[in-house]
Image 1 (cartoon, one colour):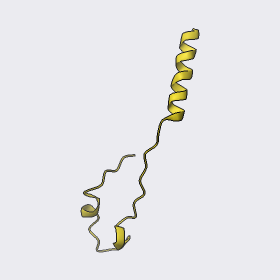
Image 2 (cartoon, rainbow, N blue to C red):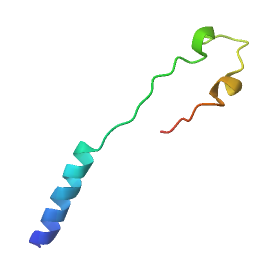
Image 3 (cartoon, helix red, strand yellow):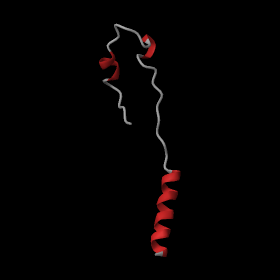
Image 4 (cartoon, helix red, strand yellow):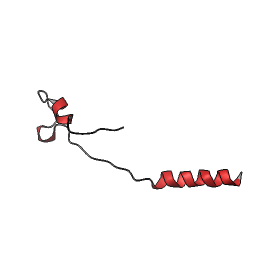
Length: 50
């Protein structure tokens, strides 16, 4: 039983210190959020993960 508790504590610790990777995007870059902008082309070279 103590082994399971130690394992659980270790997993919680690993989850707490896991690095976060983030990027901020301005939608449409210099064109901004506007009608007439091809957002599919803008997003084609970017990877989005949720």
